[in-house]
Figure 1 (cartoon, one colour):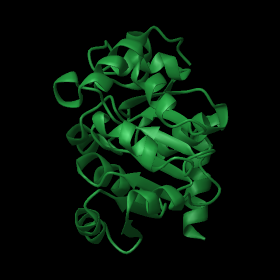
Figure 2 (spheres, rainbow, N blue to C red):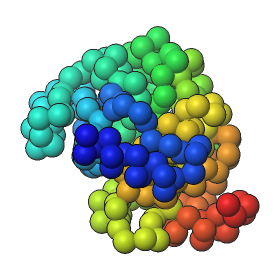
Figure 3 (cartoon, rainbow, N blue to C red):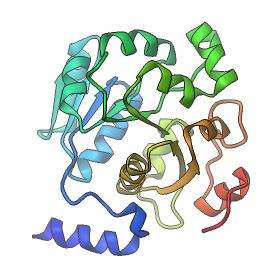
Figure 4 (tube, rainbow, N blue to C red):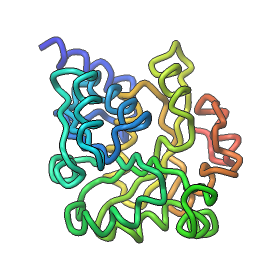
Length: 233
């Protein structure tokens, strides 16, 4: 009853398009490092069950143990099956291999892409992503999934420090092509303790990828909209 009352109060503070989920979402993370475990912790706090995964299942188990009883660990395939929403939190160069190994498992699911392409680390796929836009390239690697770029624009140390801060909240940009998926991700951003800033379709995610004006901007939502040339809401 207390959680239901709290959610109702939070929903009243959010625009209708960002109303929080009526029930918890199962979230799978592909990656259990700094990005995966930080975001998993924030969503666990909001009441969503999480399965962390990694190529080394031992590291996923360790991360899950730290996060508590509502976190579990599995393989990337397990996490892909588990999640209503799946977070990609690995080096960008790992995405082509994951696209092949998870083929079909993510079709129809919301996939949050928090990975950033760095050519010095990730090679040719990163160069392609920097040229064509990381969101568009990620979508091509996971056909059938509803890819939304989010949580790639700020360092996880900033995310940890600024979550649920005293308003005005830190603005987090996100972009995707599927309206329903955008609403869900916007709600997850809000539940994590930030002010969601919808930038536009997936192609516009290049506005907040590395090397762009919106990357590591560390701004409030109104300031970020001004920086990105978006209309004020």
